[in-house]
Image 1 (cartoon, each protein chain N blue to C red):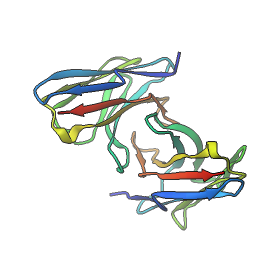
Image 2 (cartoon, rainbow over the protein chains, first blue to last red; image 1 turned 60 degrees about the vertical axis):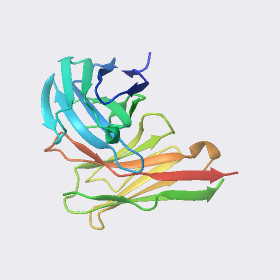
Image 3 (tube, chains in turn blue, red; image 1 turned 45 degrees about the horizontal axis):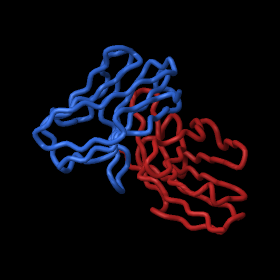
Image 4 (cartoon, rainbow over the protein chains, first blue to last red; image 1 turned 135 degrees about the horizontal axis):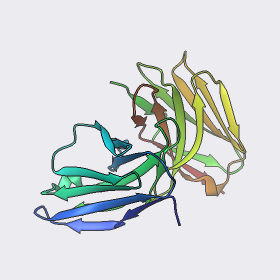
Length: 112
Length: 112
């Protein structure tokens, strides 16, 4: 069982659809993150949760809505996305924001 | 805002040689600096962390240096192997913030 698991691995959706990305960590960490990775661009931090409270919201459009029901699970709810939102969405966890990030394998999103 | 530059988008090295990747940053010195490896279609994997008061860190064939005067980190892979081919990401962390900022990466290719 890997440390950080993301589902689905691939998602194709239309601009009017509503979908969710799921992340689960089995490492006992207390912080979880959503990053967006587009081609030839640095990883962009989207949201940070610490002890289930959102501590960072990096000017992300409201069509992305995060949810952290407990310290092991993180969701990213998607609605009315744009084609430029197509990217690899990476979930990560860490202990106390002080060290290494453990990433999942990512969810490859394509918006038609 | 903080900017991170990784020396080149791509680097090609002959097997057995030492690969050297560069990470430069502007403005504020981070509390620590990390290096990650990312293979195509996979999430980044943590390699090394070096703190602002450390000059050098080693792990097997990997070596990282951190020069806060030059605002630069160098990442070395000695006795490089084709299996070392991947994209390497530099990331900066700040003790007062919950975010870790990534560079856009250097794609390293080791030819036999």
